[in-house]
Image 1 (cartoon, rainbow, N blue to C red):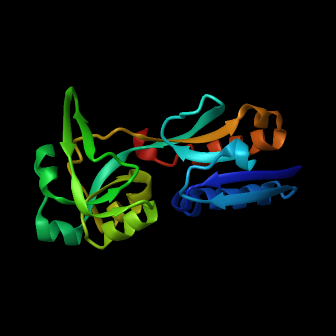
Image 2: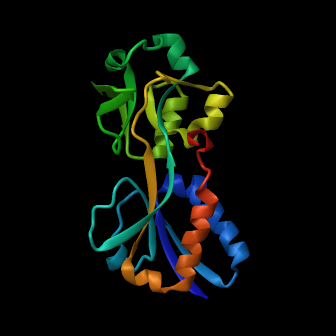
Length: 208
């Protein structure tokens, strides 16, 4: 069936996409894969990449996208951090806490509860450009962090991490497959996109 080239962030690739691609290859062994894990925004057309997995809205009118899944963003902290610094009672208290800052999350958080909305500036002594690094610093108690629920569901379930202000909601995270219009003429690419959507459909079952 030929080759498909796909780009994805290192964290999401290792956590979710590579295992799915492995299952895809087991189902369609005739398709060769060129998988490029990078945290840089790649030029799909210039680098000849068929599909890029990205979060957030599409900015280029030259490209098309389909949404693969949505997951809630949540505020979490380790038990170690909570024991040392306490639990905020209201959104405004978040400003007084230390944060593991991630370059792709705004420094002003927008939280909603019913018809109420709060905008809260936050800052921290650790800043990272890698979601994997963010999780490591978070788990080791260096501060609170905003993370996709699907990344920490197990940590919350087993008590290692605690949700902070669970009654307040942050905007959901949407993850897209991005591609050029020409790519969709390929049946193998359509097959892979359908496979990805099916495998990721229930990634955050708590949203349903």
